[in-house]
Image (cartoon, rainbow, N blue to C red; front, side, top):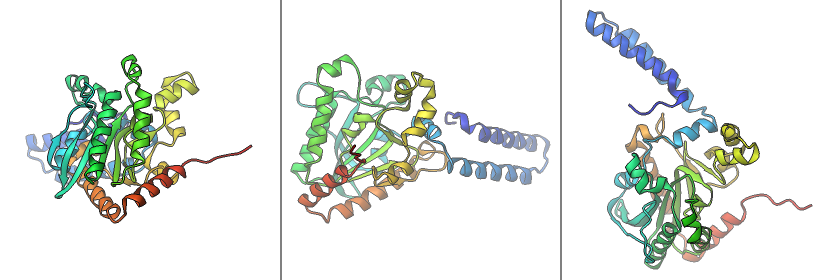
Length: 318
């Protein structure tokens, strides 16, 4: 069974009643099918209502669910013939960013994304999905390769942010991300970015200067984590729920601000409940976007991408 989140406990209680009724029916021979069906329908109705009215703080929990699909899960479900390309050619292969050539329904793509683990050992290997400068340089190397050979770029992003350690600062973390922002704006191939879980700060933006930016239904995209925001504004990280509301981190809010281009629906209960369904929804969005963007010239892609990011935000003059 998946890890149960706090707000899901009422559903768990109904499921426990269902299991209890099934046990009684089996042991006593009583026909309790009608009662069981009633409770099952009640659980399904409650689940649908709950997940259609989630607060930002609840979406935050789903985005961070330990069993949420990671980059390689999506690659294995969406792509064929994936060939990973390693290293930044300067001495390191940052495992927090993985990328390579693949095909989606026979169409060649360069697919790159942040990688999280599902166990302590994996999280240590992937540095909990927090890339170092060498990871962004590896991504840039693969971006340039794709641009040179006219291959569309897909990025899948799930990161709490770029690695904030001393080693990253010593090797120019801010500079590596800044160069990616500048170079991604210049590419003449379609670029599609999907935030699949956490999309925090420059660590996410370093892979997200794209023609189309999508957010999974229960993912979030923000300039700073809610805990970080709460620590700055209220000197109290426990006020993260309030910060999540104030930051406007959900797909609905971000579409209203023209920060993202669309929302990709998740299975009821979150992406971790059905890898096949969420992967199919993502694949459909990717293919539709590629079909649309492939009709534009390299010059048109650059111009539209520039305008897309320039119009974000509101300027006030005093």
